[in-house]
Length: 179
Image (tube, rainbow, N blue to C red; front, side, top):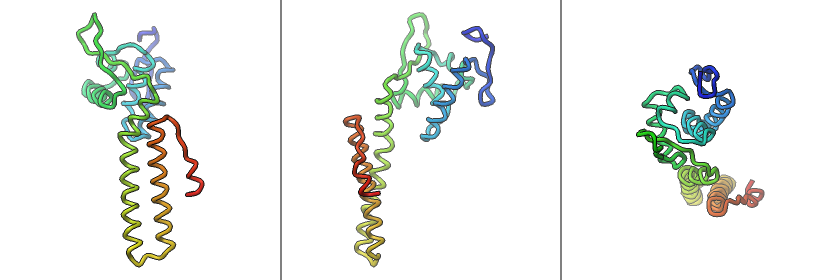
């Protein structure tokens, strides 16, 4: 029996003590997180902490999500580095407990700033270099223009990301002209 008086459930081949809605939510968040290039269990762990809205120890997370001690240690370390989980102390326990960050917009901004902005900047810089090379070579005018359009799209994407990060607004009105 788990904390709610029901029996263990099965999810993804693992035994778990989660309620059916917790299984659904944690797996859904895990899928999204995995799609973004992180690990499925990072999303499951954050989602469970968010749902429970109470400090949970590494032992609690291991039991509830059917993860190994090493996996929970690595996951909580990563989640803390990304500032989506914080450590906390519970007065009646010597163990470290964890709480989920609740500011969705702040989390999205951090991920965009730390990962996507850098990628877009690198792509834009490469396209700018390719444009300079093509303009100085024997590339035909149509090819140069196509590279220029790709560069403008990358530049617009970088500007849109920066605007979003600074204002929480997203303006892609320039996209019509480029696309």
